[in-house]
Every structure is written in C-alpha cells, then in structure tokens.
Image (cartoon, rainbow, N blue to C red):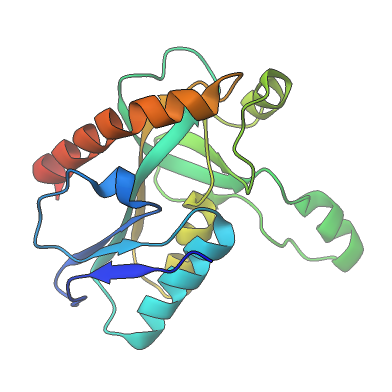
Amino acid sequence: MATMQLNGTVSPDRPLLVLAVAEEAAHLETDLPVLLTGMGKVNASTALATVLARGPLPSEVINLGTAGALRPGLQGHVHEIGTVLQHDLDAALLRTLTGHLSGGPLTLAAKGVTLATGDVFVSDPAARDRLAELADLVDMEGYALASVAQRADVPVRLVKHVSDEAGEGAARAWREAVDDCAKVLAGWVRDHV
C-alpha cells in the first residue's frame, strides 16, 4: 500500500507542492512543503484531503508531475493545465442516471492545455488516439488533486512535463525520462514559485 509522505510544514503564506512519487521530486531544492501522494486518483485525493483537513491550508496547491503526450509537438515543454477531465469516468452516463453532472471537466485557468486523468497508465496507441480527441496530455493524479483543492477553496495549479508519448513503450520511456523531467520541474519551481 502506498503511503503519503509530507516533508515540511504547511502554512497559509506558502504553497504546497504535490507530486505522485519521489522520482518526480528528486531534484527539488526548496524549503516549501512537499507532499508525495503515491500514484493514481485514490492515493492522490486521499493524501491531499488528509493534509488539507489537518490544516492549516496552504496559499495554493501546485501539482508537479509527468504526463504522457497525446499529440505531437508537446515534448520538451512545461505545460500549465487550463482544463482537466477524467477519462475513465463516464460523466455523461452518470448524468443520465442521476440527472446531475458528477465528475465533469474542471477549468483551472483561462488558457493552457487540457489534461485527461485516469487510473490507467496509457501505453496503447489506440487508447492514446481516442484520448487525443479530448485532451492534449494524460496523467494519473491531476483531476483528483484539482477536485480536492477546489472543494477546499484552495487555489490550484497543475504543472506537467511530458515524459512519454502515451503509446507503445510508454512505461520504459517514463522510467528513462523521469529524472530529466524532475530536473525540469525543479527548475520551473525555482523560476515561478
């Protein structure tokens, strides 16, 4: 079972950096609090909800992490997410059943790429192509973290660096790229936080 790990002290005058795994945080050199949640929506939402419930609330939640590219031309850049959606939840069907929208897309910023979150490491070209109709990037935690932060009235930003092309060989590519991605994300923190 994955356990969350909080390094540092959360305070209302500083952001909380949230990452899934230690590999993504390997090059962070900061005095800001860092929360490692474990992979997937349940681990991410449980970890962040636990920290926010304990209080105090941070000034902002910044989720840093890797993502798979669903379209060409996205590699080599840090992307701030404008909209995040769940690709493994049939929100339209749930709305038909209940009459209420549950788990619909979340708007985080006026501009930015669209991120699809799901509890599947996308490594199948057919799945990538299907998701590319909805989004630019794919990850496993972003939606859950954005949802928890918004429900707690804490501003949230999702910041992703592409580690793979969400196709055949994506798992190998992620393992090979995660350290370089961690360096880029650490640089983004130095320059923007």
